[in-house]
Length: 439
Image (tube, rainbow, N blue to C red):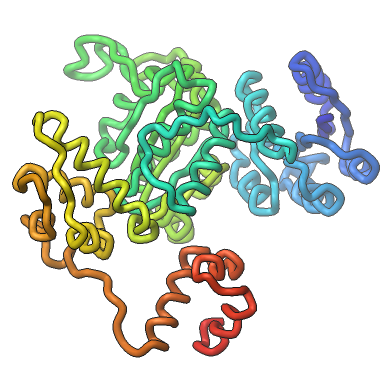
């Protein structure tokens, strides 16, 4: 059941009718007191909550109600209802624990999408894996990668916006594609946009399209990337490079799912799923006011982190063999053998360029080498700084401390997971952490 909390009877009625037609059971509350009385005794799947309940429009009543609601129902997602001009207030609400926000006037289709996504992602009885997950060419069996793919499988059927974080060359585009081809939008377009390659002056034309004669040189109408992605998925890569003025325009489209092509005053509606990616520290950029906080919270409902290649060294032999096979296919050559020394060498490199760097090294080695690829074949043409092998050094204590530090980083501080990586009991790991002052 969904609870609607709003002091406007017309809004309660219209939202109630919309949700009931969509098959949901609905309950309503006129204000904070009635809402709190209901959440004390009834468990809801979702709460839709207005931010203001009196002539005062600061939204403090909504924030206070949200905080009290989460005391009684901490796991129930709350979607805030606010005016476009009060998005800063909605962002504060999300920091307080709200799941999402919508602005008035809302688009019924978009609102229902948000409601369905919130409920589906919050269900504890989510359907188990069916075994039909498509990897989209992603190679590897590393534990961190498998955990990432498991999350991808769970969120792909929803329309939740996803933010993919990771260093350059880690395969963020492939993760985005895996989300798309495992979603209900798989048969619709998957449109990739490198925002870092679009100048501020061309942003609107590229993203929203333009009408004929909209500017000098516009001899014909042109569809923008959002319109091309209609019914499908749009992948916005390098979103951290987007200019602040363009961020405002993007936020409006992501919030309202409408846009206007240049030179055309008629709004166009678009039905899309948005996936963004960046290697930039967006949280730091928000703090430094170089990335809009409201846009940040709009795009990162689900955040995925793609591990660097140095964090999944056990996958390197699989990747090398795959890239070797791919490299010889267009050449019509016999698949060469990679010597044991060469493979060991490859598994110890730092890989600042990650998988992309490894692929380039393999392709170069295949072109210049023979039927047996030695270490030297992979080192040809590489920056010496990229070939400095990662080797343990110092005393046994130094090596043990380094191994523990690396395991803790890989496990994001989770002691149980770090202990499994190291083959230790949790208690033994904790004693080692105290010994080396790592706590």
